[in-house]
Structures are given as C-alpha cells and as structure tokens.
Length: 507
Image (cartoon, rainbow, N blue to C red):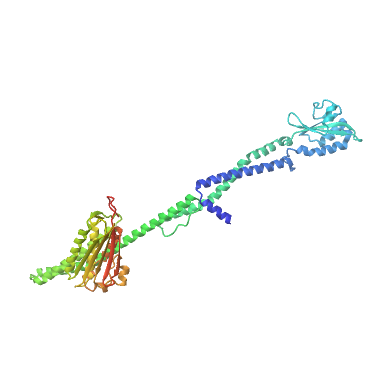
C-alpha cells in the first residue's frame, strides 16, 4: 500500500508528457522482456518437449537410442536385404535417411543412394562419430556387430536439426509456429499498450470528469463548493487549482455584486424613507401658504418667515441626503478613481479650520486648531486628492459640530510627516457608546440615540457620512480610528498616505 501510495504521489507530480513517455518506455521494456521470455520458452520447448506438435528440432536425435537398440538386437541380420523392411519401421520414413554399408564402405541398401564412405579405413576412423555435411545436415556412423561383437558393417544415419525437418510431414503447422514466434513482439506490444493505456485512463478519466462537472457547476453559477485537489498529472493539478481560484474569484465577485446591489437597494430605501420626512414637511408648509393665499387672507410676516425657514431647512436636509447617496454610489463604482494633485498643506488645512470655526461659532461652540510639519522641507507639496480630502474633513467636522452641545469645544490637530498626514478631531460631546465604537463606520449606521439626542435635526442624517469618510481614507492608503478621549468627548484619529506621482488616477 505504501509503495502504491508513493507511486501515485510520484505520478501526480509528473506532467502528462512525462507520464506518456514513461508509459511508452515501460511498454517497450515489458514487450521486449515478454518476447524474449516467450522465445526462450519456445526454444526450450522445441529442443526438449515431446508434446506431439511441433516436434522439436532435435526430435530425430531423440529417436536414435531406439534405432541403436534395434540395430544391436538384429546384429548381422541387418546385412541381409530382406531386413530392410524391419529397419525402416524403426527409422522414420521422413526426416532420417540411412544407408547400410559393408566394412569396405560399399552401400548394401538404404534411402541414401550415393556412396558416402570411400574405403574401409575411412569407415573405421569415423565409426561411432557424427559429422556435419556441407548441406548442414548431420551424418552418424553406428557399428553393426555379430554375436561375437565383431564388426561386420555400419549404419549411416543422415538427419537435420531444424524445426522444419523435424516436422516435414506437417509443413503448414510449422509455418504457423514460426509465424507465431515472429509476431510475438507485436502481440505483446498491443497487449501492454492496451494494458497501460487503461491504467492511465483509469487515473486521468475520473479527474477530467470531476473538472468537467466543476466547470458545469461554475457555468450554472453554483459556486457554493470547494474543488478538492485534482490528481492524475501535474497539468491536471494545476488546472484544478486554477479552477478553484476562478471559482473563488467568481464567488467573491458575485458576493460583492450581491452586496453592492443589496447596499444600493438598502441605500435607496433608506434615502427614500429619510426624504419622505423633509419633503412631507415642505409639502405641508407649502400647502398651508397656498391655502392662505387661496382664501384671500394675508399671511402674517412671522408665520411666513417661520414657514420659509422650515421649508429651507428641510430642503437642505433633502439635498444633503441626496448628495450623500450620490457620493456613496460613486465610491461603490468599480471604476472609481482618485485624482491626485500637489497640495500646499498648511494653507489647505488653515482654510478648512477657518470654515469650521465659523460653523462652530454659529452654534456657540469654540474651535481650536493646531498644525505641525515634521518633514525636512515643510514647504514641499503633498500629493493627494484635495476635493476628496475636503469631503473627509467636512463630514468629520459636521459630525463633531452636530454632537457638541452649545458652549462646547472642538479641536483639530494635524501633523505632517514624510509621506504621511496624521490628524485627530476631538469634541466635548457625550462621546461614543460601545455600540457606536462597534458599528460607527458601517453603512447606514445612525448612532445611538443617547449620543445624538432627540432633536429632529440630529435624526436627519443618512448614516452615510462616516462610511464615506472611512472608504475615502482607505482609498488614500490611510484609515481612521474612533475612541473616547480620556478627558471626555469623542476622539477620531485618521491618516492618509501621499499618493504616488505617476501622472494618473488612483483607485
């Protein structure tokens, strides 16, 4: 099991090209080994087997002991021509040629017609020997003795050691046997090709089917699953990992799109709800003025002044709500970009501080401002999106003024470092509740009523201001933190990084 597991892990790390090459080499090796083994067994069979067919190549040599035994039993009787019939019953009719010769080498009878021994001396020298003739056959010399073991004649046996000659009576079967041995490599090649091909298919096919199923689910936007690691080959593993990354990215994209759509839907619903109150108030006061005019009655100046102020105030509320909704929608667009420009920070913050001082004074509040620049060159420009930075400061200042009581105080401190602006805004209001600190920058969060009081004006904000602040700061490479100051009041610390000078817009 361990070896199989190790082999599978090794194959999983191999590319398809490497696996095909390995399987090809393995198929070739197995084909050669199986063919050699088949041929060895065939040769062993041909030379040693006695199974009927095919007769092995040494089939006739295996019959020699029986012939010798017959010759030894007949002795000198074999010199008589009438013994021929009995001898030929022992010697195969096809495959072995024979000749009985006298001691002088004179042929007496047999299937060999030509004289093979020139004289008796040569015969005596070759007695009990075997020689190979010029045509590749073998010639054996066997003595014929009488009862006194005196040499009387000799038996010459001529045969071949070949499969064809050993099976001369069945040439078609011999040809089939030879052809079968010649085709053995191709048979083994086909067998191992199919065998290892099936193994490779069993490894890869389930993984490919799994990827196809995953692709189908992704196509149907069924993304709520996780692709397991894909095995079988290196390319399949990489493809499976790519599918999983694509599925995750698509799921994140769809989730983001769903959240964006939901947020836009919630935003539209929230703004529509918030707009209903100021517009209803505007409509009611406008109807009151129209009723007075239609009745021919003059509207007292005090009442007219009060109505016009209410209409203006609620119109400003409606405009502010619509503006915040437009800003939030703009920030949520995928193509939203910042427009960095060089800004002189000291006059920029000084101007904004003066604006907030006037706003605070209108509510009988004091506004304190402190600025320090720790850069090597305090006069150098700082690249940021000035319009968006104003939007951040305006939202924070308006939020602080809203929650600071009359006679209270707001403090803005700005510190500039190399590539970074850090600022803190503190008010002397009631501070943040635990729920505020947890949800302050969340979309549509309107704050704890205990912090804002019960006045209708404080209730008229959309819950988008601080969400817009955090989003813009993050796009500037910065952030914001909220806490309660140790000496009381709310404390907001925020920072922005200098935008790169690449001549383009920044997301």
